[in-house]
Image (cartoon, rainbow over all chains, first blue to last red):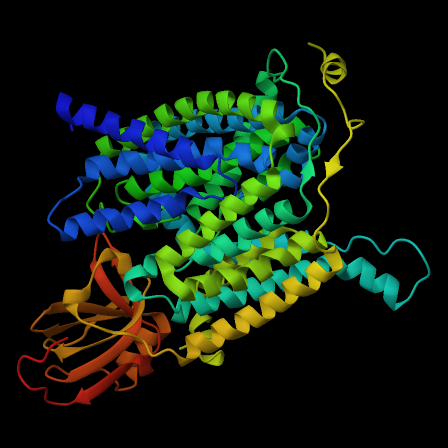
Length: 447
Length: 165
């Protein structure tokens, strides 16, 4: 990887990955893993036909794609109200900013958090992780199962009963108080059940099995947001783009550090995703300043997505978390220190480019926001999602997405957290790591 | 700029928000969502339970089969390997072989101990059918992860030579 030819190949792969991501990441409900899964199938088909795509192309392109997605996804998450599962902030300050005509600010604060996290992550990748991560990994590994249960307990406890504070006491008042909490617990249970089905006996063709979870995630997270947009989307007020972004270094470092920590937890621990990382970061900073909160969400998202890729190439550790699963079968080999430099370069370059594109796209979007037909846009995205699921996983994939949609709609319509849908991964993972996952599989008749 | 000046410089929530015409009421949608969730999961559960796991051969293997629940058949040619930590069996692994190649199978934790200690360990020369989750890793290549000791079945104690996976 030292000659000029290889360097230009890597640079080309980074640019191609970034541009591809920019083209699709603004589409509401669209996740970059859907595109990466499709591209992985194309690469395998090419390999079958004797055409090899080198790891020197796949790895930097994949890192660039997820990094750019993490930055640009703030656009649909805030301006088009169709968040992916990491975008819990859409119902929090991001949404509030949009309704105050400050959508551009919210997007750019989040993107600034992502950019800061990219710098922090690249620095950690070059100077800290290669020499220390294996030690931390050895210490943490035996404790992962109970840490996952702690996260689950924290998630469920945060669904504290709301409402039920007015009127005469009795069943009706009690039910009112427990409505959102009950919806959260129901979502958690149903999504966990879906996770067990998919883990032990996913009804998807074996040659598409690496996309087992894709229809579930589309159903749980993308479709409900799109449906709400189609049915009840509100038209946001006219937006204002201020001359500069009002953010101080203190706001930035507080947000980047807390978000980076939450995102790093999500990237390292199996079953925990960016949504939970953002949730943990949000709890650390939400009471302080809404700008810190927005910055922290951008930082958590980028650290989760790009961090998972980074953990894949750290020599001696090689963890396959999140999107790294999609490329693990394509670039499997023993990693060296220079691979970390390639990943760091991809991370920094794509984050910087994506930040600039985010600014440009956000300015265009806020100008057209009032004329934008949310309903038609969401309908188009919904059809695209359905075509992707059907094309990648067939009729059974559509059934998985449909069941997931039902589960994903419960928190959206009852005012509880969408994050409970992450039980689809978290619950089977925690049960398996605690050693009784198979017993539950037998009990359910799936094993 | 002072924070108050920033707040003065941008519009706030007094701007009108225009909702689209609602197509369906939220209460009806809640019921529909619950029906979809419970009904969809029930159908999926039934489809999953009724589905027979696909029988694969070594020639079928491709990285896109990551996490596929599968069955495989083959002859065990070497004794099962036991990996111990602090005297306790933590992993057992073995290779099945046929005309179309070899396939590695592994079992962890309780399943590994049950296979090793309850006398259910297969012997070389036996034709086995195993089921489990297919996993690819850069270090070990494709492996079938066996979840339960019952998922290792001996079909013939002396397999005919050259039996396919």
